[in-house]
Structures are given as C-alpha cells and as structure tokens.
Length: 361
Image (cartoon, rainbow, N blue to C red; front, side, top):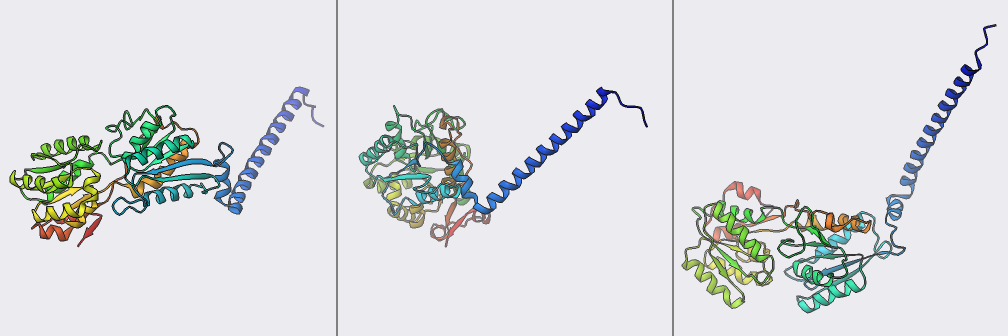
C-alpha cells in the first residue's frame, strides 16, 4: 500500500473535482437553453418572440399617421403610408394587436392638417409619423408643450426648424431626407445633357419653407459648375407663362424647378410650357417630366419608409428622437424622359442614360 496523502491534498483534489463538475453542469444548462430556444423559435415562429419584444405600456402602441394630401392623391403618392405599415408588420407589429394606427389625411387644407396634428397629440399617440413637410410644420406647432416624438420625411429638417443638425437633431423630430448634394446632382444632370450650358433659370416659390435652402444649394452648384442662375419667382398659375418667357428672353438654356405644391399639382401645364419653349427642365416633380420635362431626381421614399419602421421601434422602446440621426443615405430614383429629350433636340450621352433608374421612351 502507498503512503496515505495528507488530508489537505485530499481536500484540494475534492475541491477541484467539485469545480469541474459544476462547470460541466453549467455548460450542460447553457447548451440545453440554446437548444430549447432554437426549438421554440422553429416551432412557434418569429412572431412569438416579437410579441414579447413589443410588450409596452399594457396596451397596443399608438402610432399616428398624418399626410397633407387626400388618400389616393393623383400627384403625391400616399402609398408611402402602406409601405410604412408593411415595414412595421415585417418587424413583428401586428395591427390592432401590437399597434393601433390613427391615419389622417389633410386634403391639402392647412387648417385641416393642423386640426389633425392637434388630434394626434390629444389622442395621445406614442409616436407620430409625418409624410410631408407641411404636416411636419403643423406637428411642430402641436407638440410645443407635449413633446411627442415625430418620425418624418422632410426636404430640409434644419431649414424647417425641425432639427439642430442632421447628426444630432436635438428636438422631438427625426426621420430621413435627401442624400447630401441631391440638388447638385440636378445641376450636374443638366450640364451633361445640354451642350455649352452656362445659364439656368430657377423657377422659385418661396412660400414653401424648404424652398430657400434648395435655391441656395442650386445657386452654389451652378456657380461651381460655371453657370449663372437667375431666379424667377412664380407664385400663381398665371405666373407660369411670364416666368418662362422671361427665361427665354434672358438667354436661359435650361430650368431647375424648385419644390412647391403649385408646381407639382400643375406639372402637366408646366411640362408642356417647358417643351414648347425648348427648355430642358429638371426637378423633383415626376408630373412635369411626364408632360414635357427632361428629368426627375426623386426622394428615396420607397426605401425610406419601410426603414423608418425600425426608427419608430427604437423610439417605442425608449430611444430619444433628439439623439437619432436623420438618415440621408437613401438615394432616390432618377427618371429620364428620352422622348422629351428628342423633342428638345438633345443627344444625351450614354453615360447619363446608364445612370437613370427609369427611362420614359
């Protein structure tokens, strides 16, 4: 028989064995838990876990949806609301179970839009989603005292007084906007399309809050690319023809159309006038491009609204909109009207045609 080990050695070995057994037990429990959750996810589906994730104030979350125009407006696409709600559904929010919506349309009536904004604050909504700049302005007024978070699209959040900066909004508004240099892209498009371009007229209506900032960006881009940009203030339909005649008189070779509902709603009239005057026109308004304009560079809303569902989800789970950067990463589609280009006497370079997302032939 061997020499008996001292008692302290025996105790140390027992302690090591106990520790090893405990470690093995913990590993077993961890593996069992992983297997259980994987099996549970496969059996019950993603919705089971998302329902747990979306448990909030003991009731479905309240999300207000506000648009300036009427549902199904022929010029402004209200499909954006459907796209947003689908985005919410994709991340697990079931309508009337996890979330209830109050969906309001302003019919282009500023007083009605303001009343809708006030109603969503009084409801009260947990988050409000706003689909156009004029609704944002109404919500800015409505949320002065009750700082309900707002997720919105805007041409320029800073110019509209909705944010201190894009990186850190600092207020109760966040959302998404154009990519940086979007307006520079419009000037570049005209430079590529119109040989020898040195003078571009700007159709301008300053009564829309983002319009002055857009005008400044156009002017800076035009100057940088070697062009002059006289401004033609146009406040009424009756001003369309005089403004376009003045552009031709002043030697303008193309037009940059500023943002305004007046131009959007009368795109068929403006497009024909530009075509008759042989002035290639570029702007945000697809209605103008269809009727006689050269091109539209649109906002990236088709990508943006489903992504904004994730921003709403963050806010519902406690994130501060003042700290959520405004997204300017989503490039919108470029639409080129090749038929109108031919009628305008333009031979577009193949590189420009290749850049387009949509061609009208």
